[in-house]
Length: 226
Image (cartoon, rainbow, N blue to C red; front, side):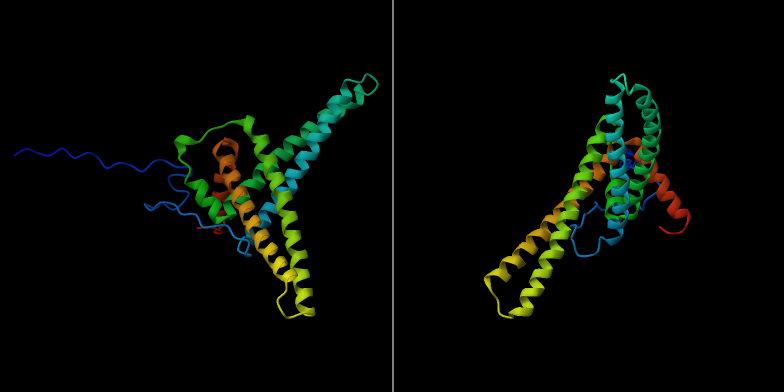
């Protein structure tokens, strides 16, 4: 009697944080929409900390560029050389802090952790030439998000004010409410784009992936994450 040859069971593709850092599942990952409904409070908290460090890096990089220009001026060359050395040292410290701050964002955002954990190991790269642009995009997104959220507060104030004066619907009130709805959608889109940029950065930054894995293990060691 002939025996049928059975192929060995195929192993699932290796992903970032495989094998034991994240729960495994045969079901495909599904991503919920990112809404501006208050459910992002913890993620926003860690993003605020990251944004602050990212701003400091930007300031130091601007200072460094200024000192390098001063170096070409013979009258200021000595002072510039000293400042360049100190600024570069400070920048390296802030680069490390920025990576750590973003790793905390990823680990403490369930959706971001889910998405980065699903990245296939075969597709991961290390491309330092892309890092600066990605961090700059995150800085711009933070600025736009802050502006939109401030606008929402102002718009809601005007709606409340109008409603207190006139309970009946009117064109101005309807326009304000539509603007609020559009702004909420804009904020939700910004959040999605911000998460997309974070996932992309994890995919092409090996040092950041190390930070994420270390932060996740540290939180598990403390019993703060399962």
